[in-house]
Amino acid sequence: MELKRLKFIDKSFVFVLLLLIVFGLLILSSASYSISSDHFYYVKKQVLSITLGLIALFFVMRYDYASLRQYNWFLYGFSIFLLILVRLIGEEIRGTTGWISLGPLPAVQPAEFTKILLIVSFASFLNDRKGELDTLKQMLPCFLYMGVPFILIMLQPDLGTALVYIAITVVMMLSAGANPKILGGLIGGALLIAAALLFLHFRFELPLPMKDYQLKRLLVFLNPYNDGQGGRGAGWNTIQSLIAIGSGGILGKGLFQGTQVQLNFLPEHHTDFIYAVIGEELGFVGGTMVIILFGILILRAVKIAYHCKEFYGTLIVLGITAMWLFHVFESIGMSIGIMPITGIPLPYLSYGGSSMLANLVAAGLVLSVNIRGKQIVF
Image: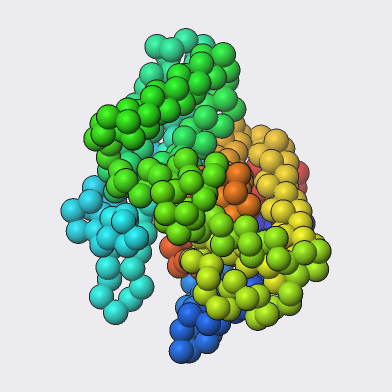
């Protein structure tokens, strides 16, 4: 039976996914070459994460996603437990308490996995409310459901992941039939409130649950040289990223030849700013190719969601698609100076074990829906 189902697997999705992984290792080998005495230290660690992730993808793909519905509240509760645990025993890295140390093993970032857990559990929650989200009162349980993990993430504070939660919530609710006018009005109101809070913070020192330098990143991308230090403060990352991408031209300087990257002018170039490495060393052509690959991956996922016979499966895939789309848009956007710096990785390309594992599990869920979502005639 499994072999018959495998003939329905979306080969284009699998091919593009593998292509992104291989390309990610190639660009990571250059991006991390100059930041460790062992030039391929990060590449070797990423290969291990990919290996574990592909094993996880295979098992998740073979597992019937529909049976996850019975564990809805357990998955939700476990995600809340992980977010509380990281608040209690988490390790602070770059101003965010989002990692749990495992001794000699690499630190784990629970927020990467809670995205997947919440997508699966929220899909079941919405599936039971399909067509019953016309009023604010009907939507309120959904906001409360996703609001708890959102608040816990903001307390870390991890604005990037919090914004991903919002994107997932909005897309999945719209897919479940939520009133777009009410949802749009709420989003607009939330943006106005956020803008007002930022104004009050910088003008009257209103306390907010984020560090000052993190808040400055939300605005400094508009003019990175206006950071109070002539571009050497909060605007530095954006400026160096723009220099790297701009100097790459059409074809780039070549792998291992980027000056901003290899001389370490560009911060976090193996993680947050991996797209800037692509822009400098592979140029406009390389950067465009990456966008096209992500576009194909996301469109194939949307097609899988569209052809799924069970609405629960459709919601899972659309939630994962929303997660990928926001990550790609925000990660590339902050590299080219059109989005604030939030520090979220570019899926399958940025270095990070937790991110790679979570994204490969997500791909496994998409493929599980893919091979079981169609009616099979024996």
